[in-house]
Length: 306
Image (tube, rainbow, N blue to C red; front, side):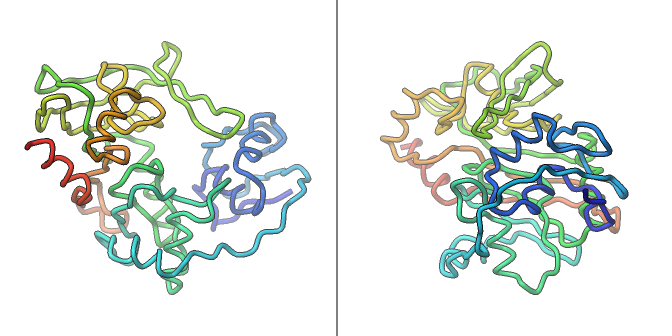
């Protein structure tokens, strides 16, 4: 039995378990949550539940595989992360996350963004992810440097009106309308492997995405996607739902189109978290940050123009 103290207030249950159960695959952590083997205050818990002071957690006995401290190659950290900080103060930092690196280590992954930053910046006592981006998505990633900031950010993210999230995406085909709003409820399933799959379903959670056409190409459209809700894989599933999946999406995309554009040089998911806007967690003043498109994406767009 474990009792939650101030240092873990506001942390998701699954993230708490990942930190406590070093060496246990993420898929197994999700399984013991689904089956009710993890109990909080005597009851079952969703993975996304936020912890509070005094919560009592029961974790079943598990055979843990020994795990040495994650070693991240220093050269890789410097080349992929050290020049990607867009903003930093005493409360938080915003990273222009590179594509191809998960936000944290897990099954089959030796390291993630957060482990890399912790080794790169050992002077910072606490570094905690405020939210997540998919492994192949680039752009604005918010990381708290204080537990107080993390708790405030969690409150902001619970209310979709308190934070503005804008993405850039390259979609299959040409959008006829300049602006399109998709209102389609989304339902999330976690497979036995721990992989998350999302689909449009009547019994899903409400989800709204606004798409604005930025540039038209012969067989693709660059859009700005504004999230009015914050569901898992929301832009990817809503793009597919309106018949224009994101290029390079190997989960929800069009494989034929992906192969065609791969031949033209697109080697990754074309989804980029372009900007975040919210009130500063300490001062309450409006704050906004933008992440420029990665050079490989900008170069690809220019190639499509020719």
